[in-house]
Length: 473
Ligand code: FUL
Image 1: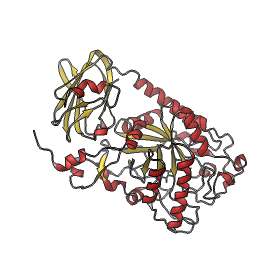
Image 2 (image 1 turned 90 degrees about the horizontal axis):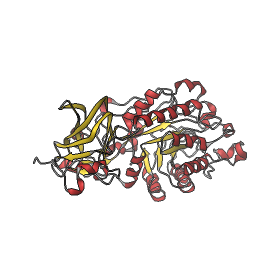
Image 3 (image 1 turned 45 degrees about the vertical axis):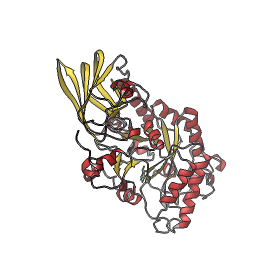
Image 4 (image 1 turned 90 degrees about the vertical axis):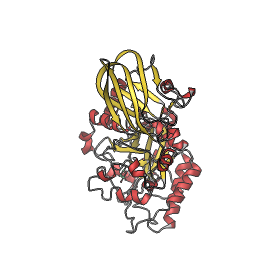
């Protein structure tokens, strides 16, 4: 048996937190960019907008959330405050909020309504709270702004039930007095941990990694174990959008590989930091009537879905509500079409009568057959000699198949580094897919074939290999 280098053993020992595991199960969830920009037709407000412009006459958060539920999403994140500083909840921290609008006599609270709709429809709820605040006078003065931001966090963390996520973006510019703030991230994180220990802190935070662009593109190998410095807020800010008038950056090709052996070899500190793909269903993040024709096509949305959810990342899709306070019919239609297509694509998992045989296993409780069990805690484990391990999936009879879904038991870490999938055709093994990362989920897509037996070869893994998900469609 070959010896595993220590740095590989170290990488193999990094595991997700419970909150990261729970978040990873969501896979597909919504972003709602809604706020004063919705009424000024802007993407970045400058902070001096009149709160009375905020008049969502037909606000219907139930429609937002119901649509997401119908679209197969499992959570939503609302922009409680964007860079303009306008707050969508009844905050005591500033008068720049819904309370200063005549809408509903100053008693409206979009955060409360959205949270209630999520409870009603059984979706997880999260908040976006922009650290950058172009309205708040204390912004850029140091501790005073940190206190202000902490007070806002405290209200959101305590007033609206369980949150699955606090999303802090990397965009950071000057405040109303022309100064920039140096955020006390450690205090922000500590408060979130204390008040909402189950919530992940995303993007400018330690739990969920920004895929690096807003175009819906992620790497073909999205490693979940990466050098720790990817979570440093200053670095995230440096690669975030600096100027709203310029188009957002595409993925940085020099940073395509974040976690292969070559990359982690010289890094003494690694973290579990899985990727999220955030993208808008339209051109902008906020609603603009002029962008009604930019709603992404079904093909584009499907492509993003397969390349994110199907490639060990999660998919955060923004659907911006209109000034009326409802989702636009075109966006609703796009979401429902996406769901309809995914329901066809994943109509029936054909492994029901299958057997899986393996050429090695750790023990009798971790046979290949275990990978078919829907319980994620039942899984195949290769034992300590994973390279070359082979699993044969026999469907019992021939089916027309164009997708195999694989998933590692990530609770025990990310182990698989290279795999190949074959189908038996005329007595020979025909190669269908070759890949690196499997992680939480890898959807292998190929030309539809009539097939009974598949072979999965783990070409290379860190300390062992596991498989807790094996489906055929
Ligand atoms: C960025 C912001 O500047 C955009 O307006 C948007 O909110 C996006 C999700 O994050 O950093």
